[in-house]
Amino acid sequence: MLRPPVSDPIRAVRASASSTWSDEFAPAKAIDGNQSTRWNSAKDQIAGAWLALEFAQPVRLDVLLIDQEVQWTRITAYALEEPDGEGWKPVFTGKDMPDSAVCRFPAVTVPRIRIRIDRTSGATPSLCEVRAYDTTAAAR
Ligand SMILES: [Ca+2]
Image (cartoon, rainbow, N blue to C red; front, side, top):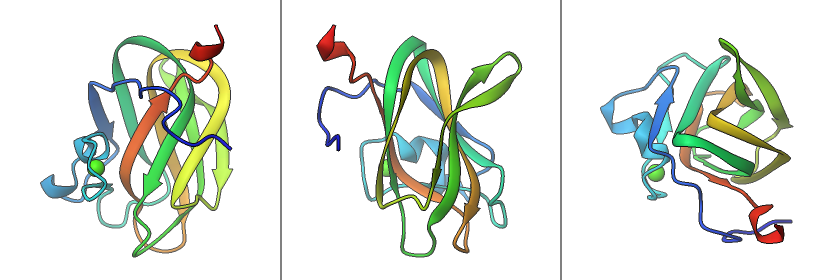
């Protein structure tokens, strides 16, 4: 199993989300390098909630590390999606996300990627940190 750091994370320049609980839980809190800050979706938004990472230009990546907040709830069904025309298509689907998820998928070159939450164990989803990696770079 991959453990970080295998390489430096690919820096996301911006994070956006389907909704936000409050300014304290803004999307940028999921890419600020601080495990004690987090994004949380708006009250009552669970299925269909998403958080997207945006890059300065298209980047190649094949791993996403996701640290979720588990004090109140756990994400029990989710997908990672790449842009597809005007929409999105999944590159990875997962169930019962651990505290720190290592999501590996066939490498994609994309300007953005998003985590779509389909279900949780109860409350709204919350992500402390999300980091993208290209673990194929060392092999090239
Ligand atoms: Ca954070």
